[in-house]
Amino acid sequence: MSRTQLLAKIREVTGRKVRALRRQGVVPGVVYGVKSEPINVQVQMTEVLRLIRAGHESELLDLKLTESGQTRTVIIQDIQEDPVTGAPLHIDFYEPDLTQPVDVDVEIELVGEAPAAQEKRGVLLFITEEVPIRVLPTQIPASIQVDISGLNEVGDQISIADVDLPEGVELMLENPEDVIVAKIGALRAQKIEEEEEESEEGAEETAEEAREGAQEETEAKEE
Image 1: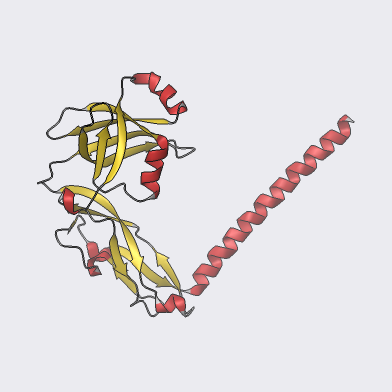
Image 2 (image 1 turned 30 degrees about the vertical axis):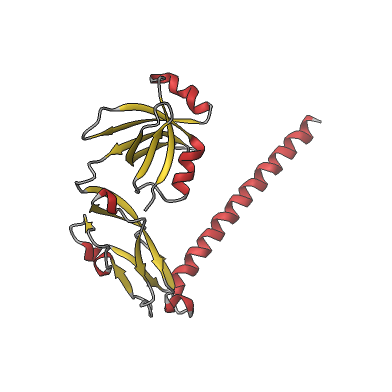
Protein backbone atom coordinates (compact mmCIF):
# COMPACT_ATOMS: atom_id res chain seq x y z
CA MET A 1 0.00 0.00 0.00
CA SER A 2 1.36 3.42 -1.00
CA ARG A 3 2.14 5.90 1.76
CA THR A 4 1.32 9.58 1.97
CA GLN A 5 4.22 11.74 0.83
CA LEU A 6 5.27 15.00 2.44
CA LEU A 7 7.86 17.37 0.97
CA ALA A 8 10.41 18.95 3.29
CA LYS A 9 13.52 21.10 3.05
CA ILE A 10 16.64 21.10 5.19
CA ARG A 11 16.28 23.94 7.69
CA GLU A 12 19.23 26.26 8.24
CA VAL A 13 17.33 28.69 10.48
CA THR A 14 17.29 27.89 14.22
CA GLY A 15 16.46 29.53 17.54
CA ARG A 16 14.26 32.62 17.62
CA LYS A 17 14.75 33.18 13.90
CA VAL A 18 12.23 30.40 13.18
CA ARG A 19 9.48 32.93 13.95
CA ALA A 20 10.18 34.46 10.55
CA LEU A 21 9.58 31.06 8.95
CA ARG A 22 6.18 30.77 10.64
CA ARG A 23 5.19 34.20 9.33
CA GLN A 24 5.97 32.86 5.86
CA GLY A 25 3.63 29.89 6.34
CA VAL A 26 6.41 27.41 7.12
CA VAL A 27 6.52 24.99 10.06
CA PRO A 28 9.96 24.18 11.53
CA GLY A 29 10.60 20.58 12.49
CA VAL A 30 13.13 17.89 13.26
CA VAL A 31 13.65 14.31 12.09
CA TYR A 32 15.24 11.80 14.47
CA GLY A 33 15.33 8.05 14.93
CA VAL A 34 17.08 5.07 16.45
CA LYS A 35 19.39 4.62 13.46
CA SER A 36 19.79 8.18 12.16
CA GLU A 37 21.25 11.50 13.24
CA PRO A 38 18.73 14.30 13.91
CA ILE A 39 18.25 16.80 11.10
CA ASN A 40 16.38 20.10 11.12
CA VAL A 41 13.69 20.40 8.47
CA GLN A 42 10.87 22.72 7.44
CA VAL A 43 7.55 21.97 5.76
CA GLN A 44 4.73 24.10 4.40
CA MET A 45 2.01 24.77 6.97
CA THR A 46 -0.69 24.02 4.39
CA GLU A 47 0.73 20.51 4.00
CA VAL A 48 0.84 19.92 7.76
CA LEU A 49 -2.78 21.04 8.09
CA ARG A 50 -3.73 18.75 5.19
CA LEU A 51 -2.20 15.77 7.01
CA ILE A 52 -4.02 16.61 10.23
CA ARG A 53 -7.40 17.04 8.53
CA ALA A 54 -6.95 13.78 6.63
CA GLY A 55 -6.15 11.91 9.85
CA HIS A 56 -2.60 10.88 8.87
CA GLU A 57 -1.02 11.87 12.19
CA SER A 58 -0.41 8.29 13.34
CA GLU A 59 0.42 6.73 9.95
CA LEU A 60 3.75 6.06 8.29
CA LEU A 61 4.71 8.89 5.94
CA ASP A 62 7.32 9.25 3.22
CA LEU A 63 9.16 12.48 4.03
CA LYS A 64 10.98 13.53 0.87
CA LEU A 65 13.89 15.96 1.25
CA THR A 66 13.75 18.13 -1.86
CA GLU A 67 17.46 19.04 -1.94
CA SER A 68 18.76 15.47 -2.10
CA GLY A 69 15.68 13.58 -3.22
CA GLN A 70 16.19 11.28 -0.23
CA THR A 71 13.05 9.81 1.35
CA ARG A 72 12.78 9.10 5.07
CA THR A 73 10.01 6.85 6.39
CA VAL A 74 8.64 8.62 9.46
CA ILE A 75 5.79 8.95 11.94
CA ILE A 76 4.60 12.27 13.31
CA GLN A 77 5.76 12.04 16.91
CA ASP A 78 4.51 15.40 18.13
CA ILE A 79 2.98 18.63 16.87
CA GLN A 80 3.29 21.72 19.04
CA GLU A 81 0.36 24.08 18.52
CA ASP A 82 -0.33 27.70 19.31
CA PRO A 83 -2.52 27.68 22.46
CA VAL A 84 -4.76 30.44 21.05
CA THR A 85 -5.04 29.80 17.30
CA GLY A 86 -4.22 26.09 17.21
CA ALA A 87 -1.76 26.69 14.36
CA PRO A 88 1.19 24.24 14.16
CA LEU A 89 4.36 25.75 15.65
CA HIS A 90 6.77 22.80 15.44
CA ILE A 91 6.64 19.22 14.26
CA ASP A 92 8.69 16.21 15.33
CA PHE A 93 9.15 13.33 12.89
CA TYR A 94 10.33 9.98 14.25
CA GLU A 95 12.10 7.55 11.91
CA PRO A 96 11.37 4.10 13.39
CA ASP A 97 13.04 0.73 12.92
CA LEU A 98 10.46 -0.92 10.66
CA THR A 99 11.17 -4.32 12.23
CA GLN A 100 10.34 -3.20 15.79
CA PRO A 101 6.91 -2.29 17.27
CA VAL A 102 6.10 1.33 18.06
CA ASP A 103 3.57 2.90 20.44
CA VAL A 104 1.06 5.18 18.75
CA ASP A 105 -2.39 6.65 19.42
CA VAL A 106 -4.94 5.70 16.77
CA GLU A 107 -8.36 7.21 16.19
CA ILE A 108 -11.50 5.19 16.85
CA GLU A 109 -14.09 5.14 14.08
CA LEU A 110 -17.70 4.26 14.87
CA VAL A 111 -19.36 2.19 12.16
CA GLY A 112 -22.96 1.14 11.71
CA GLU A 113 -26.05 2.66 13.34
CA ALA A 114 -27.07 2.41 16.99
CA PRO A 115 -30.76 1.31 16.99
CA ALA A 116 -31.45 3.11 20.29
CA ALA A 117 -30.29 6.43 18.85
CA GLN A 118 -31.79 5.83 15.41
CA GLU A 119 -35.21 5.10 16.92
CA LYS A 120 -34.87 8.02 19.38
CA ARG A 121 -34.95 5.89 22.53
CA GLY A 122 -31.63 7.36 23.65
CA VAL A 123 -28.65 9.43 22.57
CA LEU A 124 -25.34 8.03 21.33
CA LEU A 125 -22.37 9.22 23.40
CA PHE A 126 -18.92 8.90 21.77
CA ILE A 127 -16.67 8.85 24.84
CA THR A 128 -13.22 7.59 23.81
CA GLU A 129 -12.04 8.87 20.43
CA GLU A 130 -8.55 7.37 20.28
CA VAL A 131 -6.67 4.48 21.80
CA PRO A 132 -2.97 3.74 22.51
CA ILE A 133 -1.63 0.68 20.70
CA ARG A 134 1.65 -1.13 20.02
CA VAL A 135 2.19 -2.39 16.49
CA LEU A 136 4.82 -2.73 13.77
CA PRO A 137 5.21 0.57 11.89
CA THR A 138 4.18 -1.07 8.63
CA GLN A 139 0.94 -2.33 10.20
CA ILE A 140 -0.35 0.86 11.83
CA PRO A 141 -4.09 0.99 11.06
CA ALA A 142 -5.67 4.22 9.83
CA SER A 143 -8.29 3.76 12.56
CA ILE A 144 -9.81 1.20 14.91
CA GLN A 145 -13.37 0.46 13.80
CA VAL A 146 -16.04 -0.10 16.42
CA ASP A 147 -19.42 -1.53 15.41
CA ILE A 148 -22.24 0.20 17.33
CA SER A 149 -25.14 -1.71 15.75
CA GLY A 150 -25.61 -3.68 18.99
CA LEU A 151 -26.49 -0.63 21.08
CA ASN A 152 -30.24 -1.17 21.45
CA GLU A 153 -31.23 0.35 24.80
CA VAL A 154 -30.32 3.16 27.20
CA GLY A 155 -27.32 2.01 29.23
CA ASP A 156 -25.91 -0.25 26.52
CA GLN A 157 -22.20 0.38 26.04
CA ILE A 158 -19.06 -0.88 24.34
CA SER A 159 -15.69 -0.98 26.07
CA ILE A 160 -12.40 -1.14 24.22
CA ALA A 161 -12.06 -4.72 25.52
CA ASP A 162 -15.09 -5.66 23.37
CA VAL A 163 -13.45 -4.46 20.15
CA ASP A 164 -11.92 -6.85 17.61
CA LEU A 165 -8.45 -5.47 16.90
CA PRO A 166 -6.58 -5.87 13.61
CA GLU A 167 -3.93 -8.58 13.49
CA GLY A 168 -0.68 -7.59 15.17
CA VAL A 169 -2.22 -4.76 17.21
CA GLU A 170 -1.73 -4.77 21.00
CA LEU A 171 -3.68 -2.48 23.32
CA MET A 172 -1.53 -0.41 25.66
CA LEU A 173 -4.12 -0.19 28.43
CA GLU A 174 -4.04 -1.83 31.86
CA ASN A 175 -7.82 -2.20 32.20
CA PRO A 176 -9.41 -2.03 28.73
CA GLU A 177 -12.74 -3.25 30.10
CA ASP A 178 -13.01 0.03 32.02
CA VAL A 179 -12.45 2.23 28.96
CA ILE A 180 -15.85 2.95 27.42
CA VAL A 181 -15.83 3.78 23.71
CA ALA A 182 -19.52 4.52 23.21
CA LYS A 183 -22.75 4.19 25.14
CA ILE A 184 -26.42 5.05 24.95
CA GLY A 185 -27.46 7.82 27.31
CA ALA A 186 -30.94 8.99 28.27
CA LEU A 187 -32.59 11.60 26.08
CA ARG A 188 -33.15 13.73 29.18
CA ALA A 189 -29.37 14.12 29.56
CA GLN A 190 -29.15 15.42 26.00
CA LYS A 191 -32.04 17.84 26.63
CA ILE A 192 -30.35 19.26 29.74
CA GLU A 193 -27.11 19.74 27.79
CA GLU A 194 -28.97 21.55 24.99
CA GLU A 195 -30.78 23.77 27.51
CA GLU A 196 -27.44 24.67 29.14
CA GLU A 197 -25.99 25.59 25.73
CA GLU A 198 -29.04 27.75 24.94
CA SER A 199 -28.73 29.43 28.35
CA GLU A 200 -25.07 30.22 27.74
CA GLU A 201 -25.87 31.64 24.29
CA GLY A 202 -28.64 33.77 25.79
CA ALA A 203 -26.30 35.12 28.46
CA GLU A 204 -23.74 36.04 25.81
CA GLU A 205 -26.38 37.85 23.73
CA THR A 206 -27.60 39.76 26.81
CA ALA A 207 -24.06 40.82 27.69
CA GLU A 208 -23.45 41.95 24.12
CA GLU A 209 -26.68 44.00 24.12
CA ALA A 210 -25.65 45.60 27.42
CA ARG A 211 -22.25 46.56 25.99
CA GLU A 212 -23.86 48.05 22.90
CA GLY A 213 -26.36 50.00 25.04
CA ALA A 214 -23.58 51.40 27.21
CA GLN A 215 -21.61 52.41 24.13
CA GLU A 216 -24.64 54.21 22.61
CA GLU A 217 -25.26 56.02 25.90
CA THR A 218 -21.63 57.17 26.03
CA GLU A 219 -21.75 58.42 22.46
CA ALA A 220 -24.98 60.32 23.16
CA LYS A 221 -23.37 62.09 26.13
CA GLU A 222 -20.36 63.04 24.05
CA GLU A 223 -22.64 64.64 21.46
